[in-house]
Image: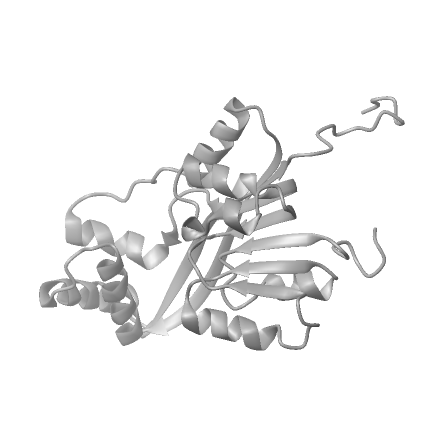
Length: 237
């Protein structure tokens, strides 16, 4: 470990940095961070959250990662760690190759490992569509298979993260209508009536308990030090 922390003196590219949820801890541990965030309100918060660091320790690039000219900026192979957490920049294998091209040692990518879960939405959708809710494809499986097929060395982890909340009948109905809009489904009066009737019938106590979350995948790709065991250890497992 380097003096000052695991990241002391290392260069980190944080793609989709938002308000600095990861950029700040990296900088706290001594890393030099380049944060890519196109959203103006979020990038403004990032600047506020990183103002206490020495000038040059955290650089903000207000742009979509896919719009950045990696060659012109000298980003190809320039960062010890490229960090991409639940970022919309990852849309296909081409975008994965772009972030990988910036990494010298490691690239970390986290993404959904299946469809998002919402207990009340899963209960209500069959009433509105007449069809059962089925699992969707996994971004994590797609990424893992391609990394394997293309010969990369990587470590992966899949976890299931859930939270439980309690809301009123009215709050539950409002949340369902918003989720329907996100799914490009009609949030009409008829839909609201079905939802409200279901909620009152199923949760007569006036409180609706909702579980939401899903499975999430994390992948750490090694571009150097590809062996799990050192030569000094004799390859012992």
